[in-house]
Length: 117
Image: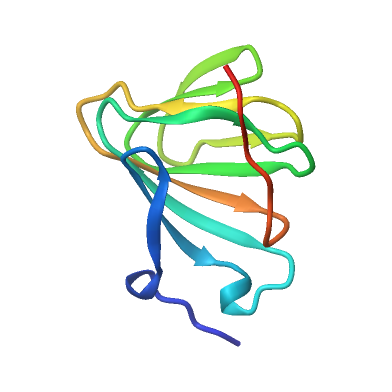
């Protein structure tokens, strides 16, 4: 059983100015799971997008985020989860003065992201 440490996770820019660390993925031996950690600074946004062929769960782990899901916009905090079905637009904005973070979870190791307005 692999033990994956956050300190060892590779980070990249998931969205402009938002670091995304892959916590679980194919590179770790996962067959059907991807988990990422995104840190969202005040004023930053996860661009509104869809995943045409897979759902995504996003768990707020720190701070407060404005979440967009379809036509709904709500403010969420630690422990709240957004479940975006395949093809439904979603995104986040950090309108607070503090840092926020979320875990993004996909039931597959590779997925497509399409930006939408």
